[in-house]
Image (cartoon, rainbow, N blue to C red; front, side, top):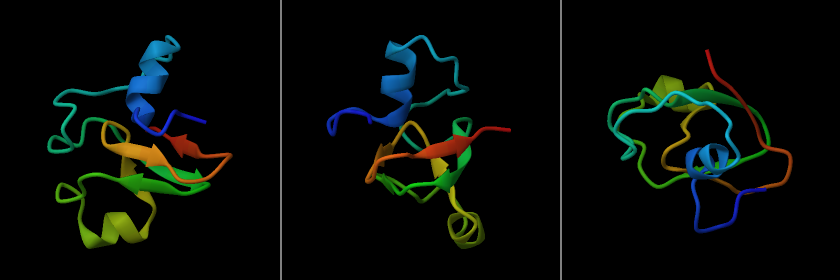
Length: 75
């Protein structure tokens, strides 16, 4: 699990996991993925529509795991 002070993207990059990203502030949606397991908390969600949020989409650059076993699918 990612340390509480690091985002999912920061942790992935520190582990040499290649994920798409651009702005790193939750505004461009380049890092968008769908959480298919576990829970993710977002620092910023204005760039996502209510429908995307309801479907489980998250932004890895501002997302923090809130549970064990978080799985995010990236298109």
